[in-house]
Image 1 (cartoon, rainbow, N blue to C red):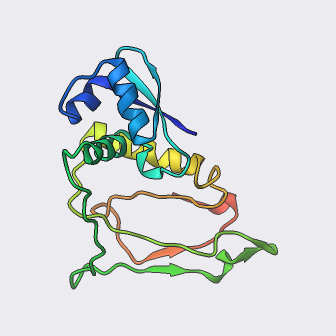
Image 2 (image 1 turned 180 degrees about the horizontal axis):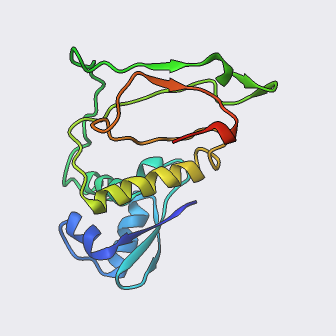
Length: 169
């Protein structure tokens, strides 16, 4: 099970109260996670292997807030793009096999709208992406996640398999 470090003061602020170590340990137990350590400024929390949504501060805070009845689950929904904002990803056939070996024949993309990042939230987001790469993506052997600011790049986009020496970012 992964262990995630979160700032104690920030989490308690998000949960709208202070906890003793014992109280927070009991909250974790009731919810189904485990407090591994409380060093005074950071809480180390063990997260079940199947809870990828809790591999970051925001996921832990949101799930505990829902559990405590402080908020309801967000309603994420898939919406079609408005006219003029459709993006395309062209998949080259060589992504299926290179030298007889399956590479990554599938690609998907998502555009997230109305997301405001400050440096702390951005760092947490990138940290979550790295944890997903390490765990779910098996060190990027199964999946690789890219994050790009759509205000700074332009489509159409191409997904292709190239030898490492030909890759330019």
